[in-house]
Image (cartoon, helix red, strand yellow):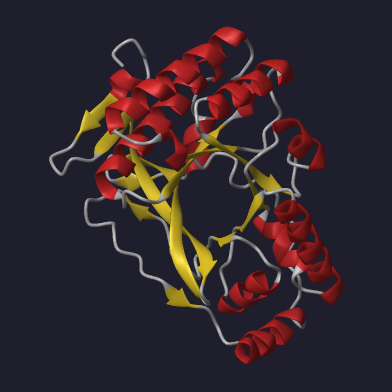
Length: 296
């Protein structure tokens, strides 16, 4: 792993976790749980690795951090971030959960970059002792640097046993055409989009139909941005495979004490319906797509 510029920016801390250092920033991993519905309860299924930058001890938004990174360094920072998440997952997370890590399609401009990225992923997984089948490679919503190169890279990831997810379905670049191109194992629905659709019976019917069509094609579905308890019940009724959001679990900084999310019951239908009715009578928020583009 010493051949990578990005990996030389990792520091191992006393508690066994890893931290990145880049251009005066300290970079830390945070993990947010993702739950699946099982026997009438929500059981822990996975975690998503998210970047948390710091200037000294002061937190900085991921958006501000990435805005400060020159384009020429973006690939190195992407690699550093994923590597940090995977090493911390090996230290901090349960051994049977999936691990979501993000890939920015815009950095894949030629075959050499794709080959290097795949080689480094294999080295990191070996170093961390993580089975490739536990890793979900989440494609963010940015435009692709080279569509042919990126499609080939995704096929190579799949050939090495990793799972593929398309993020923010319903927003920006993530649409049905990208699903057809990438043939993902998992589709994550855009949080703002599903929030708007849940506010009407017609929107909810559309969500349920889309989920059913994906599930019929053996594509698992994730609703993100579940920030109210009533949405949990609606998501379950829509037939979604997995749920993620503040109502279920907030991101936590990597720590050996992170393990231990337990299965929890989801809200009773009557309470959820009452909350939903109240929610429908509130003014709708403005649509805000792409705000997670830099959350790696």
